[in-house]
Length: 172
Ligand SMILES: Cc1cc2nc3c(=O)[nH]c(=O)nc-3n(C[C@H](O)[C@H](O)[C@H](O)COP(=O)(O)O)c2cc1C
Image (cartoon, rainbow, N blue to C red):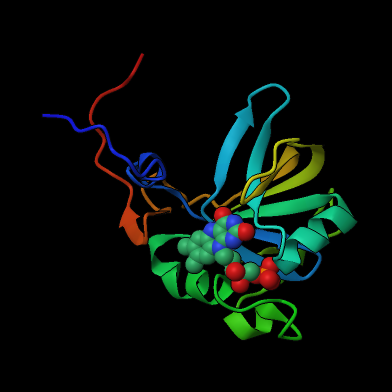
């Protein structure tokens, strides 16, 4: 039997897990669970940033960001970049033990150890701001490691890290 739940935020917390990503701007890294694709044409993605985060200040300043996809083996990196603010450390790359490389289309750095890196330029800031400000970024360049497979990313939601689920069947 279904109940009409009084606590409306439960509608959000019951959602299935999302891929967790590392957002890079300038020489800073931030963990984000609020991430989705936005459009195939032009290829674009969106990321939700809480306005008090240092990354929010950086994206507004640089109008660009990198999306770096961590793997299941990189939980420690995800934890560090999701608990330390770039305002409090000189260099989060050194703090997290990863290697920066410069974007080819953006000035910001990307994470060499992540198997996928997207270089994005901000094309839209969503007008409705709740807890998060959503930035839409058009993809300018894509780097994919030849060993990357779709079951490697790390999933996250509702306070839990998870693996990508099993393949069931082709949709079309
Ligand atoms: C698993 C996980 C997911 C997170 N998702 C988001 C998110 O989607 N948006 C956000 O603004 N902060 C998110 N955070 C919090 C930031 O990553 C964290 O506060 C970080 O230290 C901010 O860094 P900065 O101040 O250098 O920008 C998340 C943290 C974790 C651990």
